[in-house]
Image (cartoon, rainbow over all chains, first blue to last red; front, side):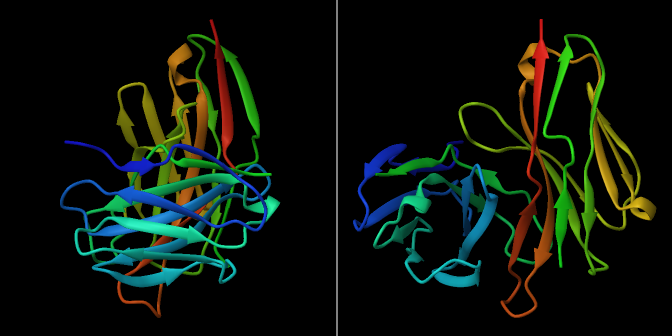
Length: 115
Length: 119
């Protein structure tokens, strides 16, 4: 069974540009969450999607957005990149749709460097 | 507010030693879940265990064991007879269920403990 796949694994952008990251969840998983990991702030929740609907959002500016497609694949977009957006962006999928806090399966992440 | 504290930033042990990673949490919820994840250098977070707030039974899985104590709001993780392959960053996390969004929850992570097991 394939795990969570994130692309690209590494990318370098310059300030002001925008970036789109992709996540393919485990087959059958309908919930996709995104987390940002930085040395200073640690792991922080960005948003969660279920059946193409954003159900929860963390405390990030509007420059961070996402969406989920009918096949459960998800993308997140960051516009007008800032140096502080340099981070490892982790995607996680889950089978459970209810608030029983099912196990999250994480991908290896997309490491974004903003110059 | 929900919070997870992992006071140990880095721990270094010699192979075969036992090591305990501490985790203290804060929550107002009566129902919640606690997790431990391992992050090897590859980056992905590997699920180790999930424990709900109503189950205080300790758990053992091979060389891993977990001690959950609601009275002290702690969920500590012990590795017995550590091995070099155990070297990684370990995260403790607490689920926070959204009261506004239907059935959604997120994980509140601690800052992680970097474990180095030397041969």
